[in-house]
Image 1 (cartoon, rainbow, N blue to C red):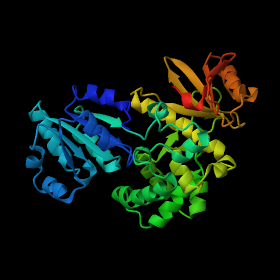
Image 2: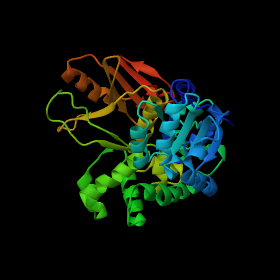
Image 3: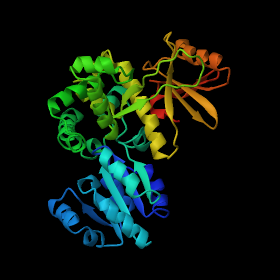
Image 4: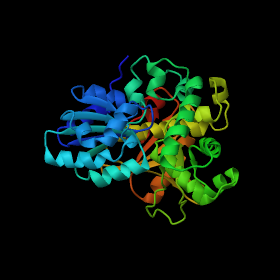
Amino acid sequence: MIINRILIKSLSRAVKQYPVLFITGPRQSGKTTISKKVFNKFIYKNLEDPETRLFAKNDPKNFLSQADKIIIDEIQRVPELLSYIQVMADADNKKKFVITGSQNILVSQKVSQSLAGRVAIFNLLPFSFKEIINTSFGKKDIYEQVIYGFYPRIYDKLLDPIEWFPNYIQTYLERDVREIKNISSLIDFQRFLKLCAGRTGQILNLSSLANDLGAAVNTIKGWLSVLEATFIIYLVPPFYKNFNKRIIKSPKLYFYDTGLVCSLLAIKNEDQLKTHPLYGNIFETLCVSEVVKQNYNNNLHINFYYWRDKSGNEVDLLYEKNNKINAVEIKSSSTFSQEFIKELNYLERITKDEINKKVIYSSMKNTRYKDVLLQGWRNIKI
């Protein structure tokens, strides 16, 4: 079954306005598939192929002159092509380039420097709920959906996520991590990745991570930047608006995919997940990831935050939309309780402004309670 990605509309629009499109995102998020689908009249070149890569390195001008419209997959394999693309895009307005790559610090810096003003950058993440909810891929059971995650290949090839994710992790470590940072011990980095999975949906404590791994805090910071750059984790900063001065200043850590989290935590079935002490955090991760995907897919450019003060009062997600603060609490229970809205009401009192209040929980339906919107997990919407 072919899934229509939401990003298709934005890509189709952007190619009329920019000479270069850069589609980035994690390994196996569907970058090649969407490129070939949307730009089916472009010729396709994959720099993973040794002969193609050698041609691109040795004779970049002729490589880029093969056609007026070219898809170049895995651009991070030959980043020096970017300077030639800039020159060609400036010299000939018929030239169109679609370049893709697993996000890479080096490449994204070169893209922004070489192609400033000429490139539209898009982040393609794994499937969102909205993309699969009305297909045979969408799971009716929350626990099953959490374990499966949202990577397209699992659904396209009908793979067992319990078997697929360990292979994905190994490939990620050996290819993406090594390309970005000179890490002497991939075993230590894998331990670090598992320690991060155990902290998803929680406030990031660098010292605790460093102590558990036996590494320096600066090493942890560098490794976190690798996970961010390759779309494995997402950091949500605290909301700094001066409601009161006693606020927490560390970000919260989330993984983009719950299937990956479950694999790293050795959660292999629904019974394990239901009783796991981190299930609430994993459910929160699922919901935050969906909101972030909607933001990217629709080019909304919304900034997300959380709020917590030193007394322990906390709201899971805050964002501003249409000049109004939206406050979201995320609860893994499927039964509504008035306790769910206590923190939202407290935040509204101290802001002295009316806010849009929302609860996302494990129900299948949307409803309202007084002035609070209650959203079911399959109906999340920014």
